[in-house]
Image (cartoon, rainbow over all chains, first blue to last red; front, side):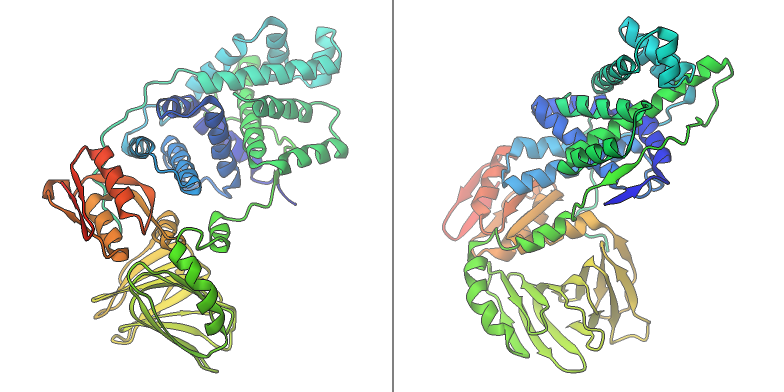
Length: 194
Length: 326
C-alpha cells in the first residue's frame, strides 16, 4: 500500500478552492443528461478519485473544464464498458464536452469570495453543529478544547463534526452556481492534427 | 448525496479527533481499499474539511490573506492498486469481435512456434497473434505483416494496414517495425503502426519507442507512452502529440470497436468502411461535418446508421451492398 502525504495538503487545498465550487454545476448538468441520483453520486466520487490519483495539479489551467472533462471521459468509458450506445447520451455527452471552451465565470475564485462561501456554509448549520464549527474552524480550537468550551463530551463533538461536514458536503453538491454555458459543438480539429 | 459521502464525513471527523491511532488508520485503509468511490468520497470530504480553515481569518480578525495558510494536517491518502484501464482492456481484448475471437484461438497457437510468419487479414477481420518471442501482435482489418524474428533483431514489415504490438522485453534483440521508409524501434513496450500511402501513424501505449526514416539522416525521435505522431514517408518526423485519450480511442479496434469523440460523420463513415464490405455512403455533403460521440462495433455499420438516423434526423437507406445516409 502506498501512502502519499507530502503533496497532500496542497492537493486538498486545490480541490477545496478550485474544484468543490464547481461540483454543484456538474451535478446539475448530470441531472439534465438523465443520470439518476445514485449514478450522479457514483460519477462524482469517481471524478474525485481520478483527481486523487493525480500526482500533480500543475497542468490544470481551468479546473472547472478539467472536472467536466474528467466526468465526460468516465461516462464515455462506462458507455463503452456497458456496450450501450444510446444516442441521447451520446449527444448530451457532446454538449458536456463543449463546455470546455466556455470561459468559466468562476475561474478566478477570489479569496474574499471563498471566505464568504465558507462562512455561509458554517452559518447555515443547526445551532450546536454551528457552535462546534465556529470554535474549531473560526477560532482554531482542538476537539478537546471545543468539548471543554461547550461542556460536551469529545464523542459528541466528533459526531457533530461528522454531521456538520455531511451537511456542508450536501450544500457543496446542491449549491446554486451561475448557470453552465452550454454552447453548440465546437468546430474542433477532427482526429489527427498532422 | 449517498451514504458513502456520509461515511466519508464520519472518517474525516474521526481523523480530526484526538482518538486517532493505528487501529483506526487500518480500519480506514480497509474501507478505502474496498472501492475507488470510497477513496473519491474521502478525498472530497477531506478537501471540504480543509476548505473550512478559510474561516480562521474571521477569528484572527486580520485581513483576508491571498494564499490560505493550511496546517500541516496528518492526513494520509491511501492509494488502492488500480491498474490503468488500458491494461484490463488488453487482457480482455477481442471480447468485441466474434470473427476475431474465433480466429485467434486456432491461428494464434499455430504461429506461436515459428520465427517467420506472414499474416494477412481480410476486410473486417481482426487477429491477435502471440509471437514466438512472447510478444503479441493485434492485426487490424485489411492488413499484411511479414514477421521475421532473427537472433540479432526482430523484424516486422507492415506492408499495409495497421497493427498494435505488445513487445516482450529483450534488450539484445530490438523489435523494429518497417512501414515504407518509416522505422519504429522498441525494446519492451507497446505501440501501434498504421501504414498510409504517404507515411505511417505511430501510437505509443506503453514505454518508449524510437521513430526514424531511412530516407533522411535525421536522428530517431523518441516517443513516450500516450503520444502519437505521423511519420511521413518522404521527410523526417516533424511533430509529436501527447494525447493519451486519443491514443486509447484510436486503438478501440483491438476490441472490435470504433470510438468516436466529436469526430465528423465523414471520419466515422471512413472508419466503418475500413471494416465492412457493406460500405456506407454519404449522399448529402452537408452532413459531412456533423459531429458524433459514441462507441460502436466495427462489424455493425447498420447499428451506426440507425444511430445517425436518430441523432441527426436524416434518411437512411440500408441495402445489402451499401448503406446510404442522407
